[in-house]
Image (cartoon, rainbow, N blue to C red; front, top):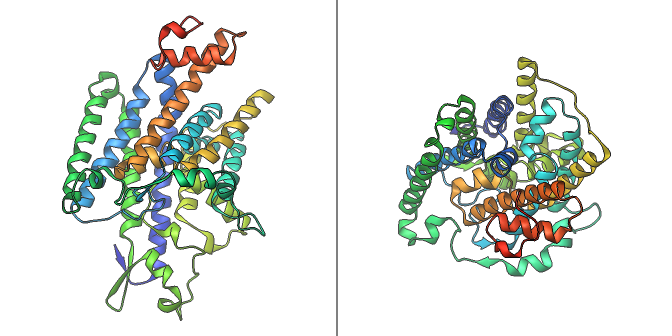
Length: 421
């Protein structure tokens, strides 16, 4: 998509994102698409319906991505966040994913789910999102009067040296082929992965016959793909030269010398990207802290606002808008703790159950797969521990942990002290 002015390109970039996010928020509310709920249904009831909807969304976005890249429509090698970075932050993917998985279980949902709940009247989600947002903001931005971020203070010194420089982008296509064959390898792997996930989803008659499950995965997957398309292809034609939105901002002083357009505060959030809901909540907090200046508007701010508005509109249309509050002090503490873990984990892992698990996996980035597995494991293990502690009220933590790990076949049954539940 080539436009003749920066203002027009920016409007399409931001408002196109908002429109897609509104649709996404409405559908998530209608269908109860929930990644934490998907893990809960699977672990606690053996129901894989919502897990299949999640995998269906991954299949749709991945297939669309590899096809668009194959036909030269877009390139996301330098996306924001850098899913395909040559710097493989495996320890941050693992620890961040685990923290996020545990956190979303305590808070009753991930970032996108809390945006949807807030739109439907759940006031406690506002507190969850504020905590996520403040932590995410200061994980990536320095404290006032300082050059230190939460990341540099808590993680950089020990996590940084563990990163591995792969010498190539970390997507499976680049890792498993020569430079000349990257695109075709991405296509083969992407199509194979999508086909396997489609088979996993549609082999279930319960999934095939559920309109909401099929609709939710399809819309979320297409929304992720649509955001990739808008942000990766929006560009400006200036005197025969074409610039991406990010390139234009980077060369603002030269290209927009006499322009009355407002220069964005940072060019990085105008790179190719798709939906994620931790850092964007942090960007939204930053937008508010800076007095809602137009220069602070980003993809993330519009994405978060769109999901919120979409959920609100659907809750009004369906008559499901309800004001909700914390059920108890214990409920409040669980939500605060969960939000804190999600704020740290989501930034550390470069994404969440949408950002890494759908947007990231669609790029076939190795770190995204690791984060996805870590999130699911962290959430599932937390649910098992909660179940055992409820059944065996006097049991010690390590006895409960061993029983939970034995349930997942990660420890031999002979080590357990508690009967399986």
